[in-house]
Length: 248
Image 1 (cartoon, rainbow, N blue to C red):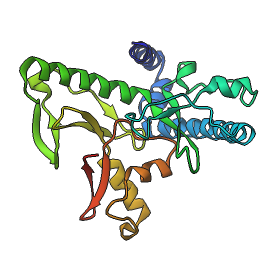
Image 2: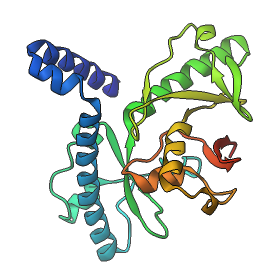
Image 3: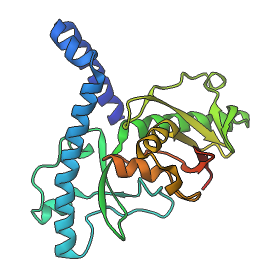
C-alpha cells in the first residue's frame, strides 16, 4: 500500500509540474532518456557510497550487514541490506534518499555474498506490479481451476491472458533501458518479468556471444553492467544466439 500511495503522489506531482509551465513540461515530460540518465547517476552514486560502507563493515566485523533470509528467496532478492547495522557502527550517516527506508523506490541488496559481496538496487515499483499480477493469477486459478495463458513465448512460459482475468495489463518499465517489458507465467502459475529485450541489448554491446556458455545465467550480464538487479526474473540461457527463459 505504501508503494501504491507513493506512486499516486508521484503521478499527482507530475501533473502539477506539467501544468505549471512549458519549461517544466519540456524538462520533465519530453526528455525521458535524460531523466533516466540522471536517475541512473544518482543510483550509481548511492550504490558506490553504500558499497564502501559495507566493505568497511565486513573488514571490521567479518560479517555482512544484511537481513536474514530463507533458501526459497531468489538469489537477486535474497539479502536486503540492514542500514541499522551500518549506522550502529557509524559507517554510514544518512540513508540514501533512493532507499525504501527513506521513502525511495529501491531496496539495497547484497549479492555474491560469499565470494565478492556487491551492493545493488532492487526496483520496488516493478516488484509490486508483478506481485499484483501474481495475486490476480492465483485468484483466477482458485476460482476457475484454469491458467489464464495465451501462446508460449519460451518452453514452459506463456503470455498472460489479462482479458480472461478481467484485468488490464500494467505498464512495466525496465530499469535498464526504460522500455516496456511484459510479464509471463509458467505452468505452475508463477509470474515473472521478461527481461529478454534488455539481455539482447547487453549481448549486442558485449559483442562476442561465443564467450558465453550454454549454462551461463544471462541475468548476470544485466547485473554486471548496471546498479540494478532483475526483479522477479526467470533464469535465461543462450540458445541459438537468443536469450531463452528456463525453468529453475
